Amino acid sequence: MRFVDEFRDPALGKVLAGEILGAVDPDRHHKLMEVCGGHTHSIYRYGIDDLLPDNVELVHGPGCPVCVIPLGRVDDGIAIARREEVIFTCFGDMMRVPGSERSLLEAKAAGADVRMVYSPLDALRLAKANPDRQVVFFAIGFETTAPSTALTIMRAKAEGIANFSCLCNHVTIVPPLRALLDSPDLRLDGFIGPGHVATVVGARPFEFIPADHGRPVVISGFEPLDVLQSVLMVLRQLREGRCEVENQYTRVVPYDGNRRALEVMSQVFELRPHFEWRGLGFISQSALRLADAYADFDAERRYEVPGMSVADPKACQCGEVLKGVIKPWECKVFGTACTPEHPIGTCMVSPEGACAAYYNYGRFAREKAVA
Amino acid sequence: MRGGTEIGRRVPDCDGPTGCITCADEATPMEVLKVDAARGLALCADADGRRRTVETALVEPVAGGERLLVHAGTAIARAGVGA
Image (cartoon, rainbow over all chains, first blue to last red):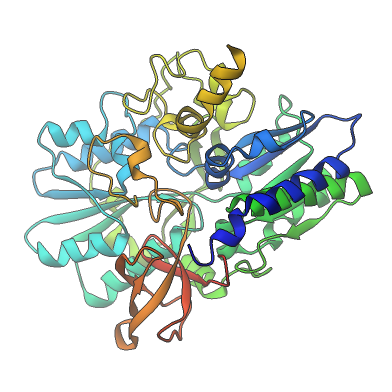
């Protein structure tokens, strides 16, 4: 495939793997966190971890937007979706995330009008086409997705589409990283930074990691050679005693991000005082809600929602997986009670969730190795 | 969601060669086919020829033949080679 094959070249991959072997300090164990679920997916899909030396360990971070949604927010969505007048829209993966009693997909089976959309703009079109119904969009995602929701809400306001609203669950990447770095049960040596979030926010917001925590960060693309090169760049920083934010994904990520995207976000959204993250608990100023100027499009103000904090099922260890404390296969229910067909936890739902990615790509090699 | 996420299908079926456009934190390079500047939209095609209408407000102005990085129906950046 044009423009893609160059970044999946096996020969170049071997060269990079050799350079990594040369750059790594053989007397140290290196624990690097890939923040973004997209990287987790690439690592398992292409077997990147098999190309790394034994003393370079990749730990999966909290950057899968589906995985970090807590049960209570799913319940809030279902409460709205069950209303007679509502067409409830969301991205495909979100439909399968379990709430405390059921998922949106199960709510649909029970009669709720829940529909999958590819973009918030699709939800707005649905509102235009169904003026006698209320169309609610369940917005999830980091700063990569938030501008898309912001533009759609601005469009709804400009066009006077009153039967459209948004249940906003957008989250921001820096606060959970701070929470992880402050966590005593996780020691990390460096970060593979989220390339597409950085497309919007730039590389600058990650400078606190080297400045305050003394850990290197490399903003990375998503093709296998991107990830390998980023691992190499982190290891070189560690070897040379450097500690800074580097940008491997320069072909897309400007150091200062997309200014227009940041402007529309700041116009439409404001920070919530706190938001609950699955596995990480409540984190201050870590999520977005609609600003007062767009209150008419805020589903939380338009409808009564339970707004409850609901504890995860006891068997589920998504929290530890999201924090990188345990690997997916170390969870008690991984691959047995919890599978992509019947997920208990969110990490098994999205293809970018660490458990689903490992279940789909990694387990066979591991099972073979163990056997 | 590339490859189509019909409800209840297994996760791998939703996984295309360049990742998912909307359901997670991924973005896909697409080529601009036709621009509707007045509405801030463009018709774009991905590497497999699948077409979608894309919001272009964050990367305007765009022209036919340009490559954009598209996430959740919105172009978030211009895509260089291999993006």
